Image 1 (cartoon, each protein chain N blue to C red):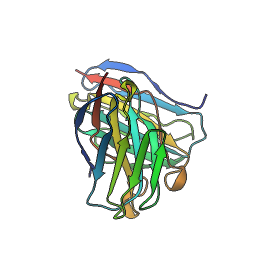
Image 2: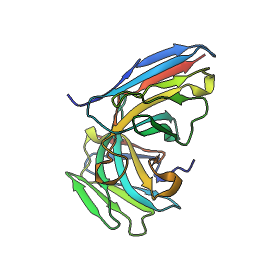
Image 3: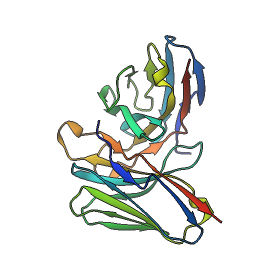
Image 4: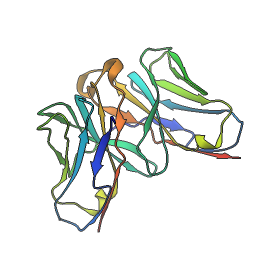
Length: 114
Length: 115
């Protein structure tokens, strides 16, 4: 099955720096979701996007639904040590046999040095 | 507390010994799903269920079975486990499959090792 192409695979940054990661696909998506996974836990939803061009913030996090509906990005501003974890993008593809399926990216491992 | 629960959290078994991983949600969600997580591959959907008695294959269904006899439960069954099914498994649920209420909530995970 198709996966989303998420980049970068990993990031090592200093506390206080901004972070940017993105997901791309060859297919059109109706919904983009961004999750964070802490060690030993299940993914937790950060931001949900439902319209092309939509820009949504959640505290220091900002995500956008690309206007082509084939990409999305997540920015984290002024990173702090508790931002450490794995970030996943996920999306629902438009209609047909994809109805009900949620596709995930490979994940971005974020390390923040104090 | 609204949550998705999975049991067991950890399981070591041998090839061919049938096992079931249970999943339960207390949020009256219609949609439930199973994923496996492997290094470098992210989460891959195994099976999903749009509602009671309605199940469908995800991207990696081979070697797995599911059932949805009640709204709150969605067990994952491995009839004859093999070592390539060693993985971290997550159950998830959402109010609906699509639209603005499709945010999925995940359980804590089940780490399965098949020897």
